[in-house]
Image (cartoon, rainbow, N blue to C red; front, side, top):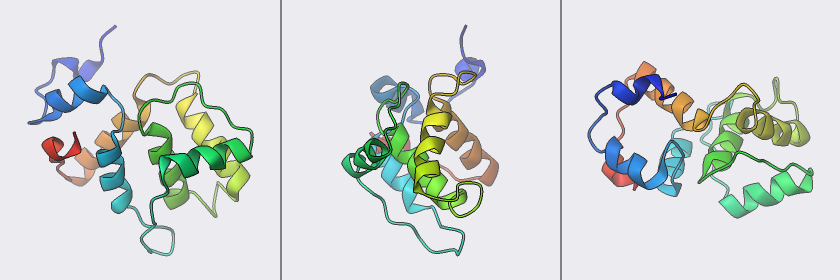
Length: 133
């Protein structure tokens, strides 16, 4: 089954991006997205490297089966930005949140990027796809 947006006209440059990364975060796109995130106090959050996020998840025994590219790095920072200190009360729950988003039984390949794109569309935030490759 094809995605419903398969037949839509894609924004300029998205075709090229998808040919490189599929429906997953590249390092450049992840850095750009995280650069726009703020915590609950409104402060900008600093991006942790992929290696640091992997070490963080490993420290809680969390293995993610459906991770590609920089998806887990994005989801980690999204959880930190939007949910940490609320429905995600601490680090162990943040690690579990990342796993639950990416390994959701009812999910699909590319869920993190698809949700991010929906947010950008809803907020009217354009992405210069050529810069994300």
